[in-house]
Length: 135
Ligand SMILES: [Zn+2]
Ligand SMILES: [Zn+2]
Image 1 (cartoon, rainbow, N blue to C red):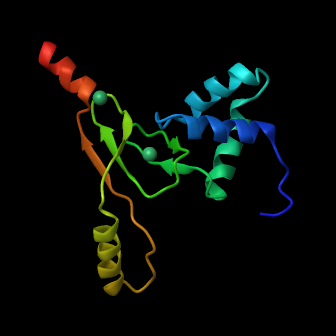
Image 2: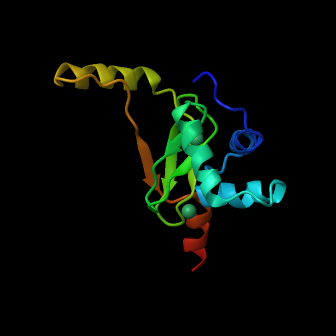
């Protein structure tokens, strides 16, 4: 995307996402960026986020709470989503081989072309596990 105007705000959004493991929503990003850029609007944050996703510099993580979450880590990795509190965290796996095999297998029976897949793991996070033990 040549000729794209350099934007300090977009840079700030990207830097924040790369510095956190929280997989924040647009609202959370907005609240964070506002500390540095008090005049920024939620709309600007949304626009920058979708631009960064388009550029492949940020990944959009669909969630169960109906909000998109954003991830500055664009390497292939998988997510755990807590069905209690909605927290999204990274999972360490070595499933890349298996998943590319699954993609090839699925492509065989598909008329179009598939070049990726998204797998999420669901359950209860550590915090929610601890809470349910107390109550
Ligand atoms: Zn949880
Ligand atoms: Zn992630």
